[in-house]
Length: 476
Image (spheres, rainbow, N blue to C red):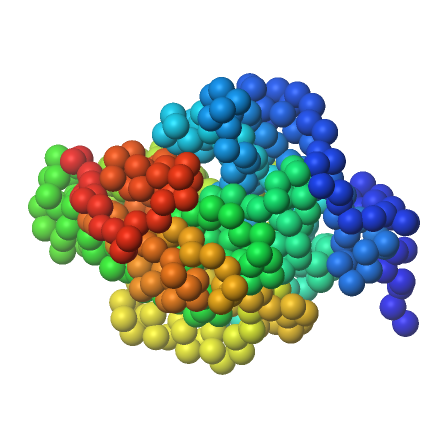
């Protein structure tokens, strides 16, 4: 016999507000929150844990805002932003992202961020040890006979530690929350900037609330595919990006890793093998190395620091630049990893254990040293079936603007094009020769930033898809 839901809810996370009505328009009351950032205001709203039980237990959703700096005549409204993940906190992001936006956008929009349910200050989900994810050094992902049992343990840890949140942290419910945010702000439509997973959240909002879609920018666009399929596509793109990285390092022999891609790869392989034999400082082994590589490949400004750290270790045994990215004591990182998996496993059909094994075999056939770090949805093989898989896009929605770098390995270009086809009439701004994740107010590309600003300020979509000259590879 199971324990009734309301008896297992932690009062620190869930508020059983009987008789609560849906969030009324314009009810948000902001207050200063200097701990989030200067000039940032914050508020909280209540949203149902389970939207099928609107008068049952509620969650607290944390929201931040930075006011527009222009005159009242310039004010356009509110731009809600999401940094991605799934699992990314949006509270401080409202200020940090806004600081990089064109001045015209900063003058015209209040920029609002929020922590999605299960993230940060919005009833954070906990998955406990996550199958040993935070224990260092971890087993080598390429030679781990217990891989499937570890994935099963991840699912079991989440089910045991997340409690009532386990079944209610997914994109479909996050979209309903997002519409509550819109209403609390008193906005008739949602003006929205979603980056990476934020693009998926935006496309899902358009499916559920097409009539409330305002000016929506989806940057570095996630494909509409099943999450496990997306993860595999990303892993393939990461291998392609790694070859580009090896070539770039070879063109800069002063980095100390050789003057040919083959020489760079040899140092790479030897370093990984040495870490498998003797983890640096007892905590940094091949799994931690692969995680470092995965992060480095997503942004070209990380290439030189990574190359120098690799050279220090490969040529002199100096491991000062190598440290685990997921320390056990890092509470935000633990929450991020928990939310990442609970959302992915709530959103789309799960793979079978056989599919997980076949995917790893296919990646190893493509390259003997694939990067398996991003295969988070593999653990969904041991998750319950999704209650409400996310729906993406709608024929009833207005056209929106997509922005994408053509060589982004984190959200591959072909997947972004497939998502565009789910969003009728939408336009895409492509950053040519772009190798980093994130474009608008990120790459400082005048062409792309101007196109997005024109759309946000005047609703002016490009007449056709637009290609912007990009930065190419870093100078080194």
